[in-house]
Length: 112
Length: 112
Image 1 (cartoon, each protein chain N blue to C red):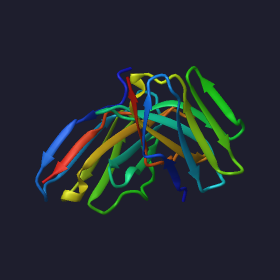
Image 2 (spheres, chains in turn orange, green; image 1 turned 120 degrees about the vertical axis):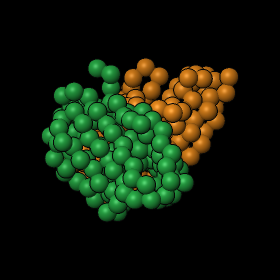
Image 3 (cartoon, chains in turn green, blue; image 1 turned 180 degrees about the vertical axis):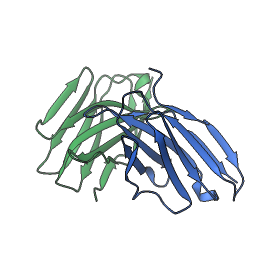
Image 4 (tube, rainbow over the protein chains, first blue to last red; image 1 turned 90 degrees about the horizontal axis):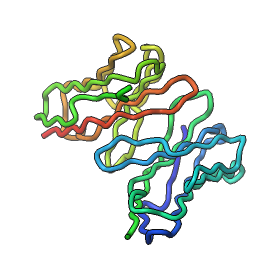
């Protein structure tokens, strides 16, 4: 089955700086890569996703890049704000399978 | 729509007792998922349904766990008998075909 590894496990950044989280996956059949944000006491919420037919996708301060050859993908948050503090999860799945495999999560703390 | 609704939000029970967690998916969503979240194992998929039919229950840890979806608007996850190692946050999530996965706010289970 798919194995997703996520690094770092914790990340502390100064407000206004950028944050980068990296994930690798094992199954070459995976072609859907979503990112979720989980705030304390809440369920994960989709913030951005990318499919294997594109290498990069942006949505305001958030961007995701994908390198299928190397089997890794990354989340970039620019101009971080205190409300970006949360746990972020990457995930992967094949297009014909709705089973997402999640990374272990990254706790991001934005220092004011 | 109110989103995915789970109950109870918190449950504390004693070892050996039966636990029933409930979920109301978003109306119109064809897929329903049950996940378990722990510090040690992260987010694990337990089972998912398509149009009320269980598709993959390979993540259900033991026979003590069972899940049902009697209709499109209701699902239960039952643990009988419960054990301390079942303590976790259990999430229900629903998904429309070719859409975004929406999580509920979770049910935090503590088995003493």
